[in-house]
Length: 135
Image (cartoon, rainbow, N blue to C red):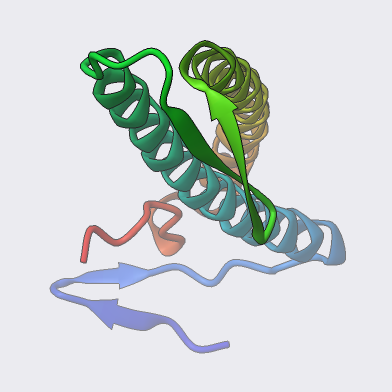
């Protein structure tokens, strides 16, 4: 591998071992998984906000005798206002627990990525870019 000129500084030859390639691949897989988890978290937070909005709207109803349609899968089931409110609260709690679990997984992946960055930057220095593009 020939030395590559980067600006006015020559980039040194670095031998990439099999272990180094495995670390780089692991970094890429974990980065991809973390991005998927972040997208899933955002979707669940949006669903959580929708449930909160529905719960707020339900509280504004004056007539307690109305049956409220509640979607379960592809079917709408009518419940009293109190039952519907309880179902909404249960759904919100479930989503909040799922978001906490996903956040914990993201934190674990961030730890792994941090360790890999230290190892890879120690060997490759400025010859490798492990920072995410902000585009």
